[in-house]
Image (tube, rainbow, N blue to C red; front, side, top):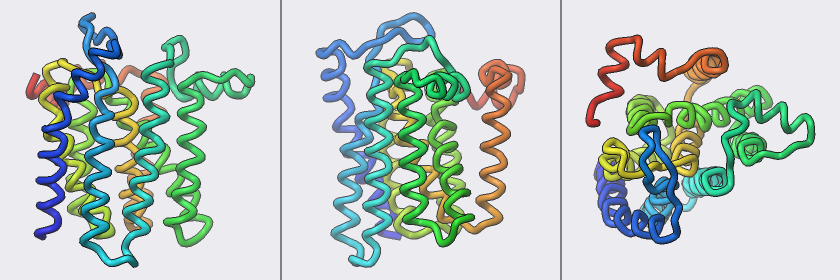
Length: 270
């Protein structure tokens, strides 16, 4: 219990201290974009999660036995890898092609987009992580899909201030209350602390965490979910597949606006 709350505290405090520095850095380097209101604000603030996660990993490596290191290091590699892929899309990407289907169509024509690279790299990284964490070929296939789709899940939500972060927090709490590996529970607690420290800036549209942030949060959920039992993972995978199929045809934002409880939750804090 002490380690859990130590992780939460460490993630919150470390991120709270780092946010102003990253805000200044992004303004000075002109990493700014128009938000949905047409205002110029820093993009790529999800970078602040990287030192937060790294500090958590160092703390856990000092606290845990060496036999527990593999999952902690795996989490670090996964989040850093997808974070860098997301940063590439934030800095160099264009929005002429949208949706997974659009990016994969381009890839089939041997045309590379930053979104296509992110999707392809994310798929390969998901396979690599699944091979390490899984017990058989069925697990590898299922966990690969869960990690890849969870990574894109947070990205789908990241269209209005705070929406993706709220989606992460709800999902992370559900996972923490589930029978996951203890190492992942510690890491999730720490990442929740990081998000709680950053979310006021996102809610007030002072900055955008960008794909670097949504990728980090998304893949973290996928990695943690892959430690659950078969039945629970099947439920999660079914939800993710249905959601992705739905968003290929319909606007998630319009759907949220039509459902009162979702709209209320979406607007909290703005």
